[in-house]
Image (cartoon, rainbow, N blue to C red; front, side):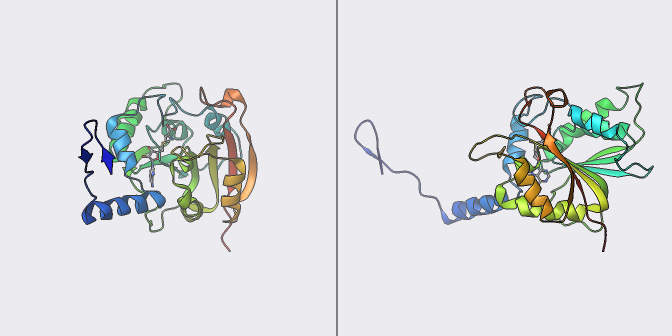
Length: 246
Ligand SMILES: C[S@@+](CC[C@H](N)C(=O)[O-])C[C@H]1O[C@@H](n2cnc3c(N)ncnc32)[C@H](O)[C@@H]1O
């Protein structure tokens, strides 16, 4: 029990059973990767380059998409789970992908829609040859038979409670078509407790995905010039091929 300046005893309000139930439900949701924290964060305002915002597309994605071994056909579909402001959607659409961004937070989804609309005609020299859309969608919600040729994870895994990491890997496997490509930009590679963002490492991501039989095609730290500003030296790139159907 706390004691006030006057020496009087302060009685802290007791959590009612209803409050306890609500808190337990929130903790459960967080451990399952569906934290209501995110809607609060976005409602309070996420500034470009502020916490949880890369400030622009990741240079590594542009470099990667210019290479030949990326799935490329007129109907190729890409997914960006936890897309935040949606910086990487126009990059994928300029390379011909029909790209969907998924956001748990309705506020973030609206911010991303405004961003992609502002980018429709932003680069006349590199027109969008694919399409872009953003949905309010929980990554862990079971989907029917939606499958993608490419999934791009940039600071989505680090946003999730570690208890949901295995489910993240299973859902990546379920959402990629056999032989599809998972691109993970792994950040922040640091030693720290707690989150979000939770600490990442190449070993962590590798263990999760190899447990789902993904084949590692590339895993290395990114050169500084391929990182977003301020993320140099603590960002890696992983490329993972989903297993072919049996
Ligand atoms: C660190 S932010 C990503 C920012 C963005 N990738 C960027 O680089 O600017 C993580 C995002 O994941 C979203 N998120 C968290 N859990 C999710 C879930 N279960 N399904 C979909 N999105 C989720 C959050 O709302 C948040 O916007």
